Amino acid sequence: QAGEAVPAAQRSSWTSFLKSIASFSGDLSSMTAPPFILSPVSLTEFPAYWCERPELFAAIGDQHNPEDRALTVLKWFISTLKGQYTSRNESMGSEKKPLNPVLGELFYGKWPDLNGRGQTDLLVEQVSHHPPITAYAIENKSKGIKLVGHNAQKTSFSGGSIIVKQIGHAVLMVKTPSGETEEYVITLPRLRIDGLWYGSPYIELAETSYIISKSYVCTIEYKGKGYFSGKSHSFKAVLTPAPGVSGKDHVIEGLWHTTSKFIGGPRNGKDFHDVTGKKEEVTALGGESGGEMGEFETRKLWSLVAKGIRDGDFETASREKSKIENEQRQRRRDEAAAGTTWQLKHFTHINSDPVFERLSPLAKIVPPTEDFYTFNENWPPTSR
Ligand code: CLR
Image 1 (cartoon, helix red, strand yellow):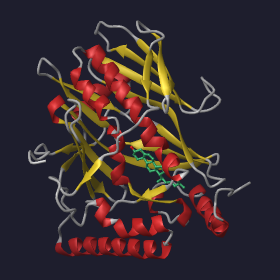
Image 2 (spheres, rainbow, N blue to C red):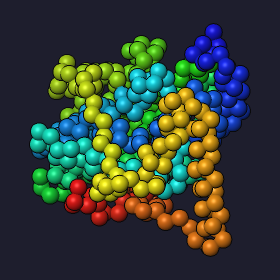
Image 3 (cartoon, protein in one colour):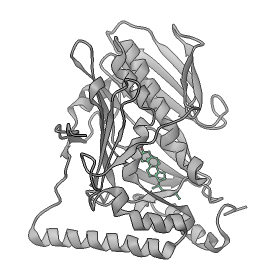
């Protein structure tokens, strides 16, 4: 039945929400949705999903050749997908609408050093409000690994599902034992949000994403129910040496939210990844070096809205949300009047990323150019 998972009192507002998304494409984040579908977490917290298995991230720095590094990067990448795309269903019963970050919103965190893996630091900044764009940097200094990226979304509606095209890419930088910096361009899969009719949305991944370095090109294909394995959350990854590089092909197949295996190449039949075990949430920090949270830090900024949503007190939630939005509008008016613009704290926008330009042709990505938010280097402060 339609709206099965929707509280009776919100059925008509859910139906009109669906109608409005069906006739609309662009920025979903700013649309008003019924209370039952609201999440108390802002999109600026999402980059933490990249590192919920910090030991897999750290392991990239321990490999001694390009082939093992490419495989370790792929294993870490696949292991992040469960958190990125299924964790709200696990913790809140369905996919939800996250809080829409304000310009300049910040999130700082870390995963502590344990068992010699080194500390990993996280920094997130909302670099655009309309359209929403979130930039992030994740670094394990002691292992010489740094991930910098940004993401935005273009949404449309098709066959009863929301289709989300992810805009933006990430660059992973790895210091190799020879002292060189090896770069990987990571592109992002397309999302389909199903289950809308019933009021219990969930994500399926679709199409293809890439991980490209100068030595290896990895093509990851995503399928849902009824395709190659017949199961939801299926993927197949093919890792091939770049033109002119000698090395072996590897083929991996499985379910990104559970396990996968090598199905071809020298390790045929061996297990590849397994995310059925425990993940490790980020430790949120106040400020860059871990003190009091400032007004723009996401958990402080949204605390009353989030509390309202958690407690089912939607009157408070929407009143507090309006306060934040009005304050933002006022800031923009003041800036316009003073002839100034908002200054980003940690990132600088560039129109074309040279790393993407260099590596994207290896996977024949069109267009071969994309903008980027480069990360200002002086971070993390040594104090934390
Ligand atoms: C953000 C970047 C992360 C991966 C990720 C996971 C879930 C996505 C989110 C991104 C963007 C916003 C998103 C969300 C799922 C639902 C939500 C598309 C890509 C939209 C705005 C809300 C739709 C509302 C329905 C749930 C009703 O690395």
